[in-house]
Image (cartoon, rainbow, N blue to C red; front, side):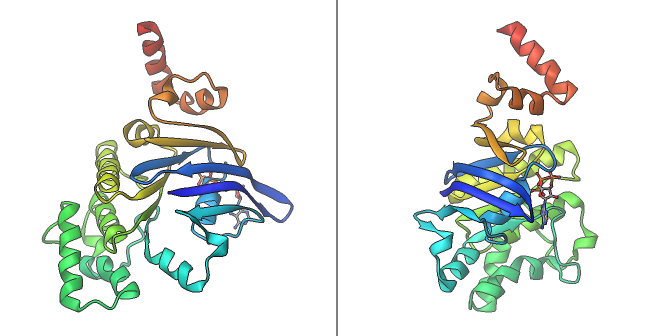
Length: 254
Ligand SMILES: Nc1ncnc2c1ncn2[C@@H]1O[C@H](COP(=O)(O)OP(=O)(O)OP(=O)(O)O)[C@@H](O)[C@H]1O
């Protein structure tokens, strides 16, 4: 569980996060949505400790990040998996080396044990026989799966995903979303996904938090989001014609 309490973050004179409070549950896919510039990435970076909020507190389980000493912060980094936009694999390393990277960085396991774990997670994301290939030699969807394997190789308690399916075709995007959700349930991870993608909201939005101009304006789940009359939600959700039509059909059917 991650709890966010009244977080404020400014850059210079400009306040970007204006008092965000919410909770992200363990074993759930928690989505942060909102229009471009609403503060999603800044919030994610505050959670990761990359930005320091001027005000407010962020708790990981029972401990506030602000109260953690260096060792506790190092341990938190070790317990956190990250899936960045574009995959962010190391081009000069093969797939096996990419996935092994967090184990090398954080653990002192024997090479054979690391390799066994690498093969286990690659199998989990349905990738076999790619160990010796380089990122440029596999498709974008496969690269994303490698990134997921790398994010979970060290058995994280927390998984942070920034636009995990950007640049993928809709079918592959859904596969990646589903994989993230399955892994979240299987390993009981607190997963946070920053996205603009309404398909992701529909597929895996077990908790959805909507940001607008640095404020949290709505929270709920993927069932509630299509029923609420909250104007900020309807403006965001139905900015797409397709979703407007779906809503019209739903309203007609009662
Ligand atoms: N390091 C920084 N220094 C100054 N301003 C920043 C910094 N990082 C973000 N901002 C500003 O904070 C605001 C929110 O940015 P943020 O990246 O969180 O938006 P977002 O909701 O993630 O948008 P997008 O969906 O386009 O990624 C923007 O106005 C941005 O210019």
